Image (cartoon, rainbow, N blue to C red):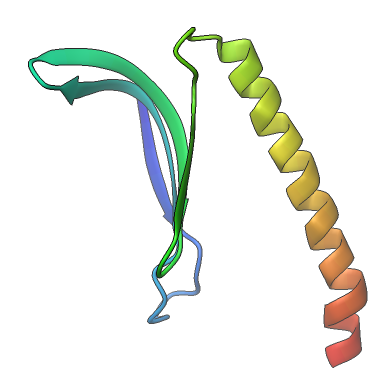
Length: 87
């Protein structure tokens, strides 16, 4: 089982952004079902990306890798175009 939550804002912030990564069993009615997901939330919005019904973990891993690649590219863009302008 894997279950980790991280807070995305600085300590002491009044904002509530977080990310949860989970792989394990969850209760659904009277059953315990396998579940794996990434959930990202901010003050008013939430997105959950999960393994599809076919439990194809390789496709799920491929989605995660694409997200990581794009997040890195976006972060680099912001650092180059926005942070450097504000200093």
